[in-house]
Image 1 (cartoon, rainbow, N blue to C red):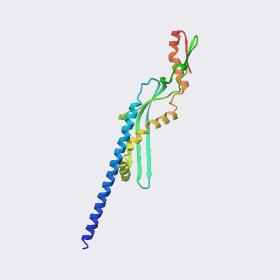
Image 2 (image 1 turned 180 degrees about the vertical axis):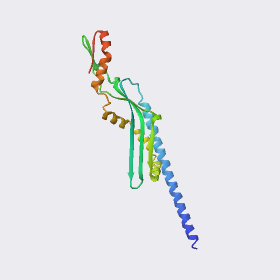
Image 3 (image 1 turned 90 degrees about the horizontal axis):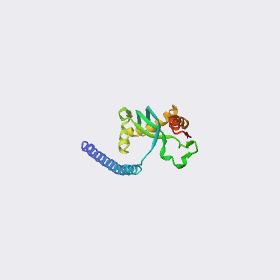
Length: 200
C-alpha cells in the first residue's frame, strides 16, 4: 500500500504535466497563427506603398554602431543582448518634394528653394554583425511562447541608435552645408549658362 500510493500520485502528476504542456502548445499554435496573419498583412502593405523615388544624396555616413538591450526581471531573470555592426546612412534631399513653386527664375538668376534634408536610405552590412546574448532559462521559454526574437529586437534599434550617434558626433550635414556643396557643384554650370543658380 505504501508503494502504490506514491506511484498513483506520480502518475496523476505526470498526467497533469502532460495536460499543461498540451495547453501551452495549443496557445502557442494559436498565437503563431495570429502572428503569421499580421506579418502577411504588413508585407502586403509594404508592397502597396512601393513607389518611384528621386534622391539627391549629398552625404554617405558609414560607422560601426553598438546596440544594447538589458532587461532584468525578479521573476524571469536576465535578458541581455549586444549587437555590433557596420551601418551606412545616405543623407540629402528628396527631390520628389520639389514642385513648380520651388523654382523661381529672374532675368539673370535661378532660385531653388530646397526642402529640409533628411535620411534617404539606411543599410546594415550583414557580414559585420556580431551578437552577444545572455538569457535565463525562463526568459528563453518566455521568448519562445511570446514569439520574441532578441536579435531581431536589436536589429530594429540599429537605425535609431545610428541617427543618435551621428547627431552626437556632428556627422549629420546641416542644410547650409548642403547648400554650400550644391553652390560649389553648380558654379561651373551657371557660368557656362551665363546665369546665377542660387539654392536656399
